[in-house]
View 1 (cartoon, rainbow, N blue to C red):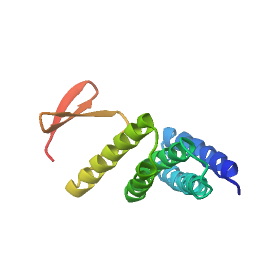
View 2 (cartoon, rainbow, N blue to C red):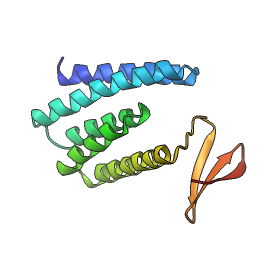
View 3 (cartoon, rainbow, N blue to C red):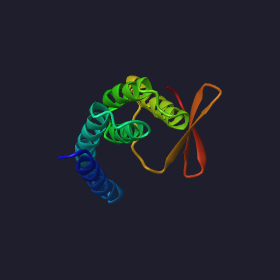
Length: 144
């Protein structure tokens, strides 16, 4: 497959995964997200190998990282962020990549502490070194 075919395949599978996730089929969604991540990662690496140029390479890498996070492939996402930042992406994309890296580190921290957040109706806040979960408009303080 060429670069465009790989990208289109990744997006198509990701769309299907998010529909499954919305319908509560989380295991199916995760498998599809991993598959979509594989295609998008391959597209990004092909773009890099063919030296397509910026911002195309970093945008594809950022897309692959987003899929890696959704597929809970955090280490893979971290590696791709390193590749993208090394390639000297435009400032705005570099900032978005750094934000994704923070998300990966946050997820890693939760894993190390044994904290699992699986419900889609929560929001998290970090207030003065304390993790707070907003659940149905009520604050709940978490010990981590």
